[in-house]
Amino acid sequence: MARILAPILVGIIALAVWHALVTLNDVPVYLVPSPLNVAEALVQDRALLVGALLVTLKVALLALALALVTGVLIAFVFVQSRLVERSLLPYAILLQVTPIVSIAPLIIIWAKNLTLALVLCAAMAALFPIIANTTQGLRSVDPGLLDLFRLHDASRWQTLVRLRIPSALPYFFAGLKVSSGLALIGTVVAEFVAGTGGSRSGLAYQILMAGINLNMPRLFAALFVITLAGVALYALASWIARLSLRGWHESEVASA
Amino acid sequence: MGDCDRIAVRLCGAGKTYPDGLKALEPIHLTVQAGEFVTLIGPSGCGKSTLLRMVAGLSAPAGGTVELWTTQSLTLEREPESGSKADTGEKPWVPAFAGTTEGSSFRRMPESGASRTAFVFQQPTLMPWASVARNVRLPLDLAGMNAGTRVDEALDLVGLADFANAYPRQLSGGMQMRVSIARALVIEPRLLLMDEPFGALDEITRNRLDHDVRELWARHRLTVLFVTHSIYEAVFLSTRVLVMSPRPGRIAGELRLDPAQPRDEAFRQSARFADWCNRLSTMLASAAHGNASA
Ligand SMILES: Nc1ncnc2c1ncn2[C@@H]1O[C@H](COP(=O)(O)OP(=O)(O)O)[C@@H](O)[C@H]1O
Ligand SMILES: [Mg+2]
Image (cartoon, rainbow over all chains, first blue to last red; front, side, top):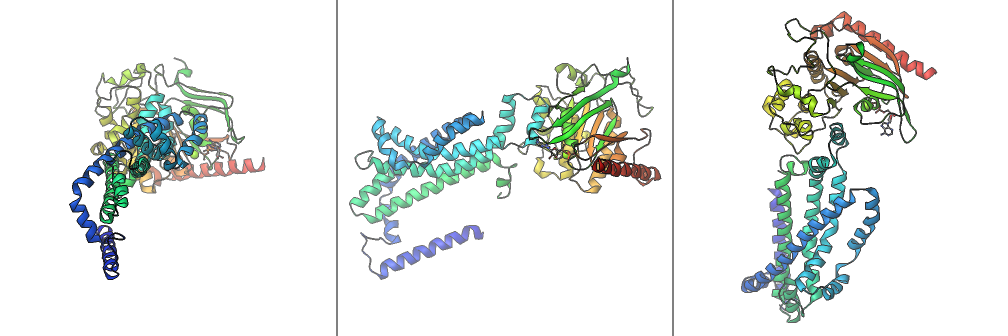
């Protein structure tokens, strides 16, 4: 109970303090809106914001799916041999440490379709945790079980399907949880880079426009919606993980 | 049929040096007859697990040979333990699984080419994502064999018939070990290798499982190669105990124990049990000393 109540209480206190500071100091709305202004904007602009949210979510989910498929495939390639992993891992890391903002312009220029460009940028941001976690998972198989499979003449394929993949699932889901957030961040960053000349639809576009028009309540409302979407994506990933691991994996058993 | 037909395992000069240069085992010469219950005992790190893994084919010997007679050609001529059993020497390794009738599909198993060597590890080594039943049937699945009623029968044998749908984490350590044993029995093994299977369990559970293993051995006329560092366990279970020296391991002594001696709770209290334990203890001490002075 305290696990849910405590953070809610902190949130309410923070909002109250925010509200008090803004009203007591007579801060103009175009600088810092009060929580009430933001709530008002949320209600008034809901059609606009929900439309923008759907556009952004679509890109983020497509990117996450792309990152999942590619990341898992790359992980499977990595575990085929240490040599392959050693040769390719530096490039995967390179991809990870390159700021998405810096390559987004290139991708947006190269890709003909803007949605495709955004998806590619976001997928790139979400890719690495899937690769790293799935690779580690596929490798961290109970050596005793590996012996057992060898003893019973299991084929490579049987060992993969019956042993390596199930062993890797908890790691894979840990990666999925991280990547779900990264996919959204990547999407928003790419939308920012695409700017006002681009899609005219996503949440980042709404933030940019609201900023230009000094419509702070709407800007804050859009920010709030992004945050909410991030939390929702994470919750979705956790829920899928719990559903798949329920009953056998400690990380989910303990919290159930 | 000659004497050779009854050999289950033969090691001729099979030694082991690990790639890092560590000499774990001196060349070992060892012959295990079908139907024997042989226990390896020795200090930690003397190479018992290494030896067992070589026999299982999980670790290649550095020189020498390891031979197994665990294919269908093996026939067992040992006398039945109790007069009530109708089995005769003609029958090749009839599975005496409880409730299994004549003509059971067990006997087809050798033709399928499935491995007939089972290994029970120190840890239960179960797949946490699979139910007890699916864990037990794994060896059959891997060999592409139809499980039929074998899983239920194997679980019945270890007293876990009611837990087929449970998950490993729902079971106690002792029960998990039973699942592990059921998984070994489900292929109706010719050769059962057990590496300190009950080392992690409390003594009460261990004694009970020792009793069960001994019963299974007698009922199914298994050939068992068992590893322990418990003198009591070795004496309670075995028809022959091999005493190993500290690393690099070699077989420093052998104690043959009357196979006709019933192994029950009364035996644990008997003077004979104490006597055998003392003799084994002395042999272990001199094996350790012999190596130190060498
Ligand atoms: N894979 C391995 N690589 C290198 N050394 C090993 C390996 N496995 C076991 N050893 C070493 O070989 C020796 C014998 O090990 P083991 O057979 O496990 O002994 P025991 O089962 O009698 O305790 C030990 O000193 C151990 O450290
Ligand atoms: Mg050992």
